[in-house]
Image (cartoon, rainbow, N blue to C red; front, side):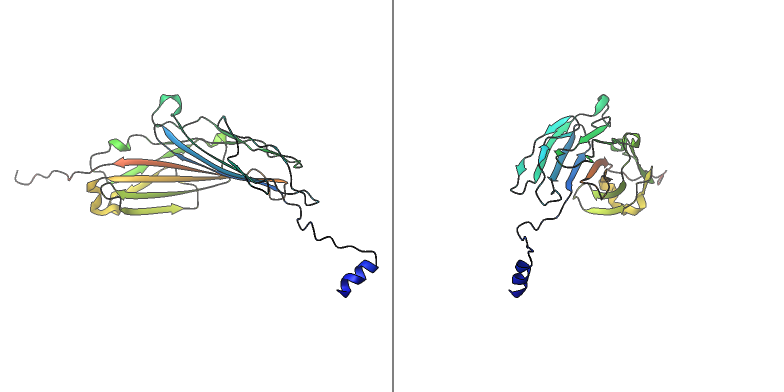
Length: 248
C-alpha cells in the first residue's frame, strides 16, 4: 500500500486495465486431400487477428478466405475475435485422368487484418500425382514400387515428411509402418519379404505426404502456417503362390 501511495504522491500512475502487449495476426490452417476419383478434401483453419501496439485487438477487414477458387466464410467467431474455418468437398481429377490431382496449381489467399503492414498475400502450392497401375498387380512380385510426383514448380514446401503403412486386406491388421521427417524419395520400394506370408491375402497400402508451408517470417505482424496432407491408397493382390513343376 505504501508503494502505491508513494507513486501517486510523485505524480506517477499505474494502469492495470490493459495487460496485453502487441501480438501478430496468426493464420493456422490444414488441408487434407484423400486422393481418389473423386478426391475428398477437408480444410480446417483458424485466424487470430492479434493486437496492436497499444493492446487493442486488431480488426479483421475482410474475413473471407480463398482456397482453390472457393470463398470460405468463417463457421465460428469467438468473443475475442478468433475466426474458425471449416469445409469439406469432393473434386474430380483434372484432365479426365483417373490418377490426376484435383487441381493444377493450388492457391490460398488469407483473410485481411487491419494494422498489418506486411500482409502475406497469396500462397501457391503444388499438386501431387500417384503412380498408376498398382491395383492391377495380381502376380507375385519381389518388390512393390510406389511413386508420387509433386510439381514443386507451383510452390515448394518449407518442409516435407512422409509415412507409409501396409495392412492386411482381410482384417486391416498393420504389417508395416515407415515414416521420415525428410522429403520422400522419388521411388519408395517395399520388398515383399518385409510383409512375410500375409501378402497372400492381399494388401492395403496408405502413403501420406505432409507438406509444411510458412510464407511469413516470425518477426512480421501477420504470421501464417499451412499444412497439406496428401493421402494416397492402393489395393494390391492377393498374391497366388507360384506354380511348380512337381509331378511333371
